[in-house]
Image (cartoon, rainbow, N blue to C red; front, top):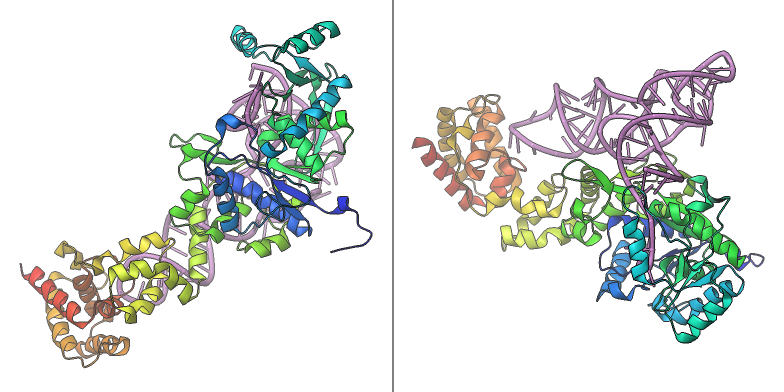
Length: 494
RNA sequence: GGCCCUAUGGUCAAGCGGUUAAGACGCUGCCCUCUCAAGGCGGAAUCAGGAGUUCAAUUCUCCUUAGGGUCACCA
């Protein structure tokens, strides 16, 4: 990768620049993922930068959530606040003194100006613009006489610095996925660069930092598409090279009322942490969201993070928004669970096993065997095997099964026979139990179903069980099994 | 409302002028089967509408419609 001739600029550098809001939803995660993939698939560098220019919205511990999420997701950054790097500091609040001189440079060049309008004035401006028209800033201070500006500055009147936007013409910017986008300049407001408190606005800090940190690919959600021309104008004002823009299609959620909108908390558990808590595996989440808005060249769907790095390319990113589909996520999760080794599976399931069948470690492998193809989340185990803890109260009607020709009468009879056969079994392993019941069916000249069905019902008290009669007998052990069969007979004689 | 973006089945989507319009989830039928899964084999379901361009439009252009985004001293 280290080519002597390659300049620093030829190395792809992307950045994930979250605000520490204390919440990381899958949209943000996917942006981070794509930024990581774009960098890594090109052998480039993935940078983490914390954008905390809004001191009013600072949340305690919010940056830790960002670190944890990135860490759990396996998106390791090469530079960032916690590990440093050649372009630090990587927290905007630590770079505060850096931004204002750039803004003042633009002022001195006539590309920006001081604005002394109060917040009240701006508010009333907006309030006056009732009805359909939404008025922006009226550029009141754009052409203040130099003397007046000096006077106000020396009086210490609070001010912001705004960019002087062109009033006519159009601005075109190029996006990697959306192509050329042109907007009329009159739509662009004289945006604030430096706030009254001296802090830069998000847009301004973003551009300065991206430039200073040598970011080559700016990857972000398409909600920023409409502010992209402003960015271009700013790069132009400084005479800086414009980075490659990669805008990502939005991830949307479906509300309870069926309406679709940008994914947010109102769509339920859309935070990465929420999904983990709900039992979704990190690998499944990453795999799924990678495919939300990106498509490989072939029809493959299962990808590890490393495989994504090797396969990802920008031209596979789609333009249209995608709705987050829990069903598909569920399927991915099931796929990942089924692909686990028994040991891996056990490490997730052990606490539930111990709760369900304490001290019965010898049957845990069997539990795994039964469960692995049947669950899509580990949280489902308890419910699926709840009958192991206690025989549920059940309606005897569930013994009746047309297909296996099971009736209340022959069930009762069969349970009686089975109780005898099973109780005389010398050992309680899969082979003996299975053979016992199948040979019984053979001797009676009936289908296996006719003996298996009533036994399974009696022993589980449930119509639907994971696994068959033999497996459940083994899980319960001989004593408990016989006890339940006997209870089943009582139940049928009532 | 202005501006911007998007438009292939319920969902994710391939397609990039000529195809029987892939594949996956979900739904569904059958097989397997003591139930439920898993697995195997099938099925239903898509080019929003209208004008052009072209020998030929899902594909290119325009309009309409629909959805979304954005219009802060938030990010």
